[in-house]
Amino acid sequence: MSSSISVEDKEQLIQASIEAKQNSYSPYSKFRVGAAFLTPDGRLIKGANIENASYGGTICAERTGIVKAVSDGVSKFSALAVVTYVLANPYLVCPPSDVHHTASRDVSSACSPCGMCRQVLREFCSNDMPIYLVPGDYPRPLKENEKSEDGYIEGGVRQTNLAELLPDSFGPEHLELPRK
View 1 (spheres, one colour):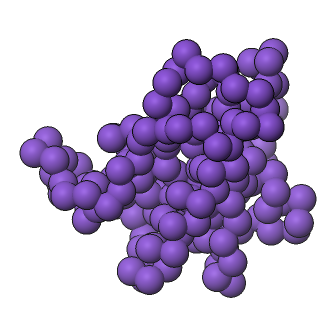
View 2: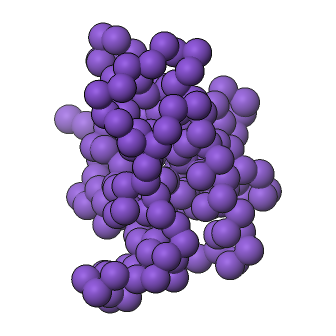
């Protein structure tokens, strides 16, 4: 399935993604997402989703992390963890200054990166890089429908990789193919 990282690195990565979601700016969807990337030299780079009233200007947590990293000269990654979160009262409208402090509840299942994020990940990440999809109520026992053969590991986390999330993908190497 995926290459692997140490148990300690995985736990630090998951905790960093949980910390990152606290900085989500999601007053419209009330759907908070945190992401954290592990670099080959052991650094953790966090990202949170940042929404915009135009909706099209919204940037997902995974792309926020990539943009932060690449802006600082980092373009290689060893692993990614993504965690989701939703506000307890989706009808509660709070001013932006209070959005980080609004009562919230966790999404009990792990969510996968959107298609645009998957394509951006493909630009900078290897197809076998481990991606940990973390449920908002992490850590928890596996549910009856969460099987190890489907990639579920301790804590309710689903371990996957980019090749599984974006099969038959288009990447930078395709631009180098011979042309007629």
